[in-house]
Length: 279
Image (cartoon, rainbow, N blue to C red):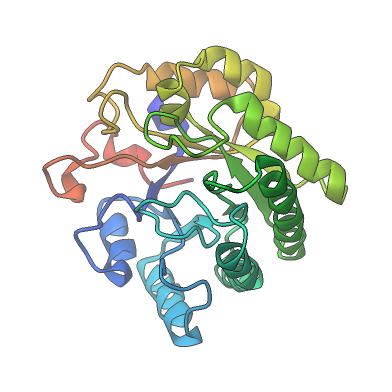
C-alpha cells in the first residue's frame, strides 16, 4: 500500500508551466512520469488550428507520455472562469464548438477521460436556466465522449477559491453525474474526486470515498493548506489514496498541485522515482 501502489499522472497545466506547452511532456518524462493530464491548453479558442493539435500530439508521442485526462474548453482557466457549459450565450456556444474537437483529439492520443467544468453562476441569469443548459451540454459531451470510448468527468471545486461555482460539494457533483447518466442511458458520466477541493470545503474525505468511490472516474490531489505537493500541508493523502484503493478505485491519480518557489522538476521529492512511471 502507500504511494508506490498508485498510478500517478502529472497535470501539465499547473506543473512545468515555466516551460512552453510543447516542452512539458518531455519534462514530465525526464522526471520519471509516463502519464500526464491537461486543462484545455488553448484558453483563447475552443477550435485551435489542426496544426497546433498535431504539434501537441507529437510532443506527447515523442516524450512517450500517455495523456490520461483532458478538460473540454473551460474559458479563462487559469483565470476568472471555471468552465463554460452553463454560461448562457457565447461561452456555451464555444463549449459546444469544442466538444467534437476535444473528443477527436482525445481519441487521437488514446485519452479516455474528458473533464467538463460546470461554469460559474452568472449575475442576472436564472440558476435553473443555467442548470438546464448545463444538462443539455453535458449530454452532448457525454455522447461525444462515448463515441471515442471515453468517460465524462464532472468536478467539485472549492467555495473559498471558486465562490461562483455551484458544485462545491461531492453530493452536488454526484447529482449532476446521475442526471447526465439518466438522460443519456450511457452510464459514462463519472465523478472527478479532487481531495484538495473537497478538503477546502470541509468535507469528510473518508466518508466521501466510501460513498462515491464506485462513481469516481478520476482522482486529483494536492495538499492543504497551500495546494502544494504531498507533505507540504496536513492532509493524510497516502492514507486517503489507500482508502480509495480499498474501496475499489483503480484509476489514475492526477498530481494537480503547485510546485512552490522551485522548478517543477524538484517538486516530486515525496514520491520515489521508482513509483513515478505508470505500470
